[in-house]
Length: 440
Image 1 (tube, rainbow, N blue to C red):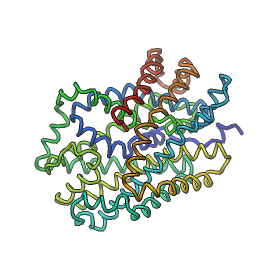
Image 2 (cartoon, rainbow, N blue to C red; image 1 turned 60 degrees about the vertical axis):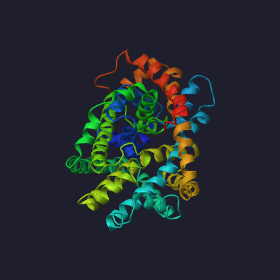
Image 3 (tube, helix red, strand yellow; image 1 turned 90 degrees about the vertical axis):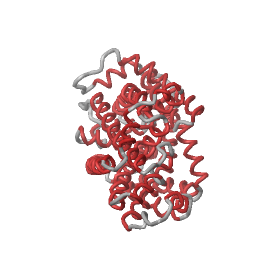
Image 4 (spheres, helix red, strand yellow; image 1 turned 135 degrees about the vertical axis):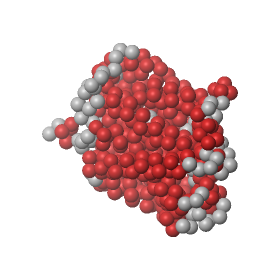
C-alpha cells in the first residue's frame, strides 16, 4: 500500500474548508481582530487588511496546501523531501523549527482555552454576571493555580478529537462546530446591532478615519493580522494540505477559507464594537476587549446571561478548531519522526504541552512574555521558510503546477511573481516589522 493510499484524508471539500477556516478563525479573529480594529481606526484598518488577506493570504494558503499535498507529509517530512531533491540533508532539522514554534503556540492556546471554559461555566451558573468588576474577576483567575484545571480540560477535549484521526475526528468535529459558531455569531450580531446607541459603533466600522492610513503602524498591524488570521505558520495549514487527495481544488479552497475566515472576523467586530459604543466602552481598549470589556457589556445588557453563554460557546468552538490544527501539526510530526501510533503521539504531545504550560498558567507576566516571544519573534519565520522552500527551492513553476492539480480554474502565470516575490518578500518583511512594532 502506498503512502497516499494509507494516509488518512479529508473526505469532502467542505469538510476540509471548514477545518481550515476553523483553524484560521480561532482566538486570533474573535479576540485579536476586534481589538486591533478598534485600536487602529476601525474602517481605516479594514482597507489594508482586506487587501493583504485576499492577495497574500490566499497565495500563502495555496502554497502551504499544495506543499503538504505534494510531499504527503507535514512540515518535517515536506522540508526534508524538497531539500533532498537538491542534495541537502538538513531538511528534517529545518522542518523541526515551525513544529517547535507551533508547540509553543499550542501551550499558550491551551491556557487561553482554559480561560474560555472557565468563563463559559461561570456564565452557565450565573456567577459571571454577579462576579463584580470584570477586570478584577479576570485578574483573580488568570495567572493563578485555578487555571490549571481548566487548562487540563482543554487538553483532554482536543486530545479526544485528535485520537479519532482526520476524517472521523477533525473533519466531523469542525463540520458540527463551524456551522454552530456561525449561527451563534448571527444571533449575537442581531442582538448587538439592536442595542440603543449601537449606531456609533457601526459608523466606526464603516466610515474610515483617513488619518490612520498615514501611520506606518496601521499598515504593519494590518499586514501582521492578515498573516496571523489565516494561520500562515509554515506547518499548520501545510499538514492539513498533506491530507488532501490529488483531485482537490486548492485555489478554490484557499479563496473560500479566506472568505469564511474574514466573514467571521467582521461578524465578531460587528458584535463587539456596537456593544462597546452602546455601553460607552473604549473601542481601543486593547487585548482585554474580549475577556474584560465584553463581560462588562454582558453585565449591563438585558438578557446578558444568555448572551454571555452563547458568546463563550462560540469562542470555545473557535478555540478548539484552532487547537485541532495546531496540535495536529505537532502530532503528525511526532508520528512521522518516531513511528508512533496516533494515540501515543496525542498522549505524549498533550502531556508535554500541559506540563510546559503550568509555569505560564500560574504567572500572568511569564505568560505574556512567552506569548510575545512566540507570536512576535518566532512565528513569522515559519511562513517565510515554507514560502522560500516551496516557491524558490522547489521552483515556482513546479509550485504553480502543484497548486493547479485538480483545480477547476487553474491560476495563471501572473501568480508566479505574486507568490515568489510579493508573498515571500512580505513574509520576510513581517519579521522586521514584528520586531519593530510587536506584531503577533
